[in-house]
Image 1 (cartoon, rainbow, N blue to C red):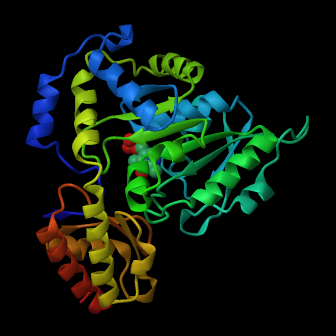
Image 2 (tube, rainbow, N blue to C red; image 1 turned 60 degrees about the vertical axis):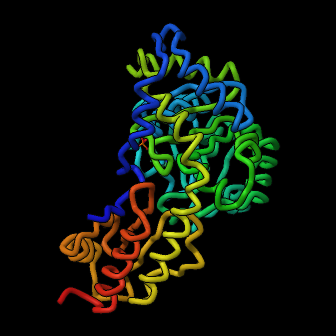
Length: 346
Ligand SMILES: *Cc1c(COP(=O)(O)O)cnc(C)c1O
C-alpha cells in the first residue's frame, strides 16, 4: 500500500525510536523534564519568540493560542477553509465561547484587503468586536499553499493599526520555510502566537507546540493543565520532535518534489490539478472535469494499492511524506493517472 491520505501516517524511524528511548526525562508538570524544556527553548528561539509549551496535538496548540487572544463573546476571523474553523470540531466556540466569522480565500491564500473589509474592531455595545485573526501557513485545505510574506507583513500592519492579535496555525510552517527559504523566525515574529506540529511532515509520532511571549505561554500552560493535558515524563515525545528537527526538515524538499511528480502524473490523466499550483507536499485533485466522484476514485485507487483522502464530493487530497519514497510515488502516479484517463468508474 502507498498511503497518501496524510503526512500524519508516518511511523517513527528506528533512529527516532532510539533517540526517544535514550531521552533524559522528568515530571513536566513540575517543569522538570530536561528534554521538554530544551525543545521548548529551541522552538521558541527558532520562531523568534520568548517561550513555548509542548502540546499533544496541533488542535490544542491552536486552541490555547486562540483563547489567550479572544474573550467569550468576542470575535475571531479566519478564512473559511481554515483548520481552526473546519477541523477542530468547533473547539473555539465549545471551550472558549469564541464567535467566528470567515472570509473566503481561493486556495486558502491571504488577501489583506479582504480581511480589512471583514473586521469590526471596537464595534461598540451593539456589534461583535473582532479581536483576533488566524492565518494558516502552509494552508492544508487550500492545497499546501504558501502565504506571501509581503501579504503577511501587511496583515501585521493592519493588526497593529486596530490592536488585533494574530495567531499563526503553522502546523506545516516547516514546509513553507523549505519551499521558500524564508527563515522560520521571519514568519514567526509577525505573529503573537504560533502553533507548529512535529507529527506531520517531520515524522514524529505525536507532538506540537505553541510559542509566544513569556506571559502568554505561562497562561497557556495553566489552560493546558486545566484541559487535562498536563503531561509527565514526555521527554520521550520531545526527543522525537528534537530528532525530527535535526534530521527531517531539509528532506521536506523531497516531499515537495514528489508532490510535483504526482501532480504532473494526475494532470496527464485528466485536467484535475495545475502542477504549478502545488508548491509543497499536498496535491488537491478537483474531479469535476471527470466522471469520478471522490469516493469512487478513492475506492478504485485502494483496489490498486494506493490510499488517498476523499475530502469532498469531487475533492481528493494526496499528501507526500517521509514514508512515501520515489518508487511508491512513481507507482501511485501511474495508478492515479491511469484511473483519471479512464474518466470514470469502469
Ligand atoms: C494537522 C493540522 C493541525 C493539528 O491537527 P492535530 O491533529 O490536532 O494535531 C492544525 N492545523 C493544520 C493546518 C493541520 O493540518
